[in-house]
Amino acid sequence: MTIGGFAWLAISLQNLEKEEQQRANGIDPALASQVEQLEKQVNDLRKSIPGNLPDTLQSNQTTLAQLQTQLQQVTTQIKTLERSASNNQPQSNTPPQTAPPSNQQSSESPQLDNNQE
Image (tube, rainbow, N blue to C red; front, side):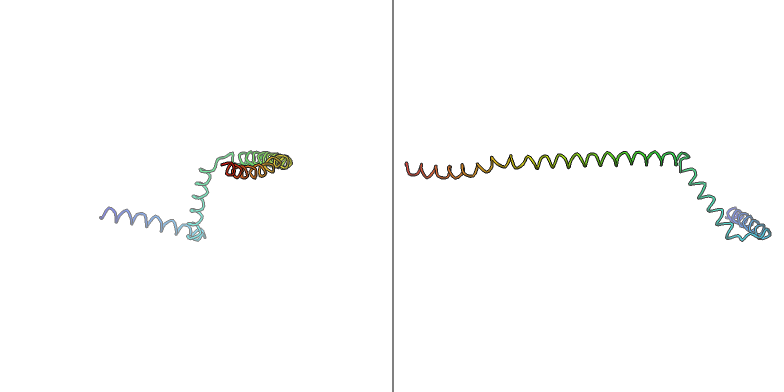
């Protein structure tokens, strides 16, 4: 327990000495502490952000622009295909129109069969 007390005392004395030196130099200890924290955060960010970030960002923006162009082209092609399909649909609708009369004939056929029985 005494070793821990001495360690705490040594750290406290170092911090007090540091604060006194900063006060003697006209630096507010609270501001100095904030500056140290900010410096640590900046250093951490520098470690986590790659140095070629601007180049990577530019490359990604170029790729994104190319993909947007391709998307527009595909969308245009889809609309063209939909239009051509809708122009062909009225022709394909003609056979289903002939189907209902054949259904009517088939419904008459059982009646004829019934009459024949």
